[in-house]
Length: 143
Image (cartoon, rainbow, N blue to C red):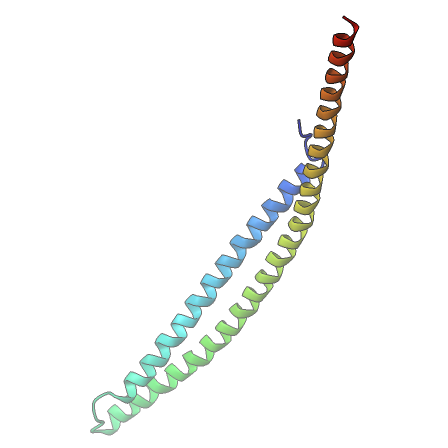
């Protein structure tokens, strides 16, 4: 019978930390994807404005210029948001990698423990079988 891994509690904690880091990474990637999508949408909006109907008077020209300026400003803000969220996603990736590395070390120790404990159990069982066989030979030969 394989004995329980003495660091099982710590391994569960490391797995919980890894799961939490994975959830944080997924959320950061979702936020990054949302910001990138908003940026693409704003770029399309700017491109669509260029293909709009012809400008016939000064008021329309002013409105188009203002709309383009606002869209460009929004693009700059979205670029900054994308960069910030990319940095957040990179930090989340680093946190996940560190959590995974910590869990992996303990997982390897657990594997080694299972192998050693199984080998010991098999040795004990083989010794018991050898002892039973030796008894039956000595008892059988004494008759």
